[in-house]
Image (cartoon, rainbow, N blue to C red; front, top):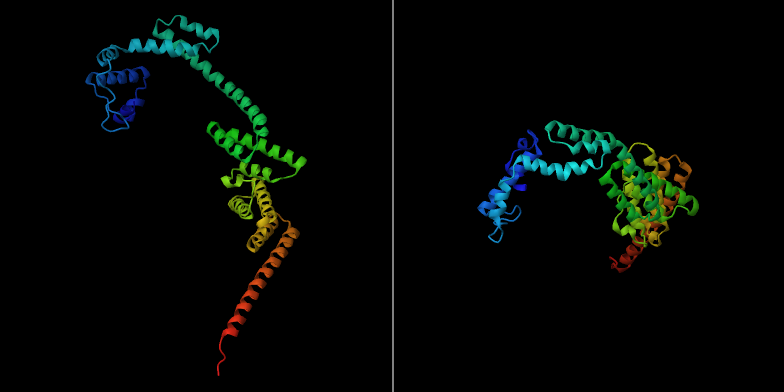
Length: 315
């Protein structure tokens, strides 16, 4: 199959689309390989898949004896008839007598028409089942890591299921926030559902101010590239939550973390029109800035006076 895909041009597969003809020619090519006792491996060079231990002569003669009539009958019995069993009785009964081309065509056309008419209904039923499972199972085991897994798997099936999963997670976070408050785990779950990748180290229970500050920065970059929307407001609030987490961490005493977190919070609150809160964080940033620079100036003064005392007096 793989060798034939390279040898044959695209139009050989598509111009005269006949499954029986294509399969028959490939079976005859396989028979020739068996007769010549040479079938090269597709991935490994200089590797022959056939040796004298196989009864290649008998197999090759059997393959060469296959014709379109026999192969068509085989496909009909092993595939088409089995598919008709899923159809209503009045359609499956059409295959009781397909002795002519017209009868076979009418029977197959009836199967195809029934399948097309019911595909939309089956899709709706499948979506209903998927939505029930998402609503029941996803909420029970909702963690940042499980959310990443759910989103990746649902995206492979249908992107609309990802939207439904996002809505379910938003409702779950809102419900738990009302009862238990907006804790760190809910922050991470919400950040995951708005399609922001959570690094593996974020799953640790030992959060650091630096990690929280980095996540907030990622969210602010996403906000800067988006237009004003509900999603942007969610990202802004998440960014605020990560900044407050950074300030709550034990290592938030670092002057740089303290100053940056307050500056970012001031900008975010200004963006959302909360000017008094923005001024509050500007004041805290300025106090931290002054303390930091005062300490630096004192350190330089001490070094200057030490050097001055060590310098010999000039006559």
